[in-house]
Image: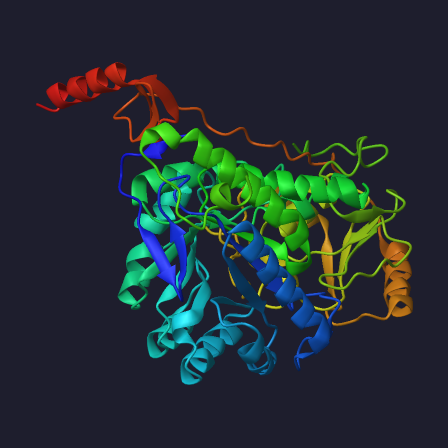
Length: 307
Length: 215
């Protein structure tokens, strides 16, 4: 393992810290709930779901977080504003940590940001994401909201690879007039988290790993990815048994953390039982590897809790 | 690549389809493909059928598999759209308008509609070889199968060779070590831009040489 010569910033969202030098802070693990096709959701448009099951999943993630020392974030996926409103209403008594606002639909994301602000949750919300797809309407919604934390998606299909991903963040590359980072800062976003954008295996998934190291070296910002997408979109693996799929999920998570990631969007919250131990193990290995590089892991680190 | 003026005997080369994905292969001699967008439907009678949830890589895979089989003349878009991504709208836009110089699919309302792994000739071939049948929203498998049967009867093989999309290799570049911006300890550093692990002394010499060259 290694340390970066550039200072690594630490982002604090509602008490959860992301970033720093490898081995300094435990990895932040973000499990998704109410995702498309989630069995506990009966009606994705109206946000009707099994509340007891949802509560169990959130509690399980929280318990694993307390046990391992890896902080957790609730990744809320909503298909509509109405559904997002229901989800926010539900989490109020069961979860008081940070949450991610996510939807495939830009209008839903924008109105969710405004709703979270109106209800007083802006300081706990992380907007997912600012990307090439962000248009003026979405920009305006974010400007009008009080949200100041966001994930910036470094996806650049016009220039695939590490250089293209850095270009879209810094200058906009060939596809935008302005880089996503300066654009995000102009929108009032302060806590910026970088996501390399993981494409399927065979389409360049591996470049997310190299990008993670390169981007931290260059930008000094926290990095994390949804590398589970590379696993779940692999047709060959989907024919295998559950044990093989879980094994690859855990391996991919650990590989991303070994490649300097600070957080993981680890996918379905049901995977918490697989991901938390794998991430805690990776955190311990990294912390031990940098012991003589003047990096001291924090008090809550799995190194101090699990070994 | 397509070899115009010749007709292929069978219409495709083994193994077909050339690009892997989460789809169901039927009879490669059939003239229809069914793209069920976000709906997990598996109608019978098509050469290949499967979902498409993304407006970039998913669309590319469909194009590559379609143009590598001359028997395919109709592409039925059915099932419900994938919200935000809009791959159905994107396939229609690609067929109608093609791509611009950056690879952006002209007229698509999808989130990030780009083609990055297909040459422009592949897009032209897609536009010429197949006709799109817009049944977006249709989820009734019986009705979809009726459409497949109908267009299978109309399909006649495209009179040229199959078009094989060759995966482009990433361009290699000369690696020149600059400053070490990441330290492994024990005097070993990495230049993350060049992705090169070097001894600290070498990195300093490189940096000095660069400074001298810049005057």
